[in-house]
Length: 248
Image (cartoon, rainbow, N blue to C red; front, side):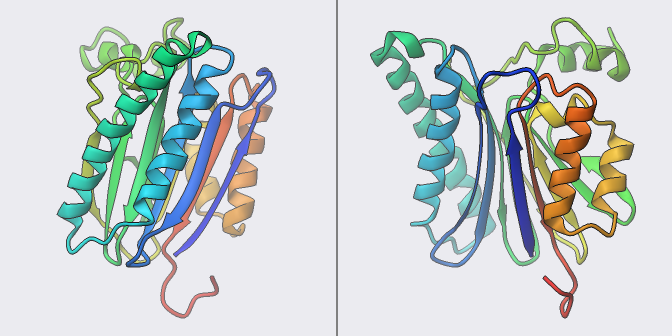
């Protein structure tokens, strides 16, 4: 498994409130996590950094006998971190209302757990196709599901930044957690909405399946998002499951 990631401030923001990290646990399993901070001048930065650093550090101390055990751990860990973020916000006036989206993956040899809360996304590139593994917890996605707007209209909807579920802000931090198989040559993409809002799925697929290195693919997607305007912070993480014997 080859993993690379890159984060960029974009072209319009004064600071980067995205955080990203990759961690290994006692069993040498990999945990990849991307977070996009919400709220306040400093609050979003604090919330996203707390989520990545705390959950990542706790993962390093874990050992799982089964993927199901990892699912239960992650769900519990997110609830605990949610409480910590809320407590921190209540402690400091300038952090009130802070929160963060989160998308994460725990990679086993032939299975992976993908979890999300908010509108940071996970995609799977397999056999020439790109599928979205996560569902956005956002107002526009609810409108799409009800048939009130199309997916194309959602991309430019004036309320597209309204998130219906986050880590922090509310005591109810319900994270979606799903288990998937991992196949040879699969590619997993985790990203913030600074990428998914600006780069079409077809372009994501083209870059993921290109001959670029994993690092270069991250750089190219960041470049594409900025070329499209770069109104938000952009974070990209790619994990590529090369065939045995491939150059990693």
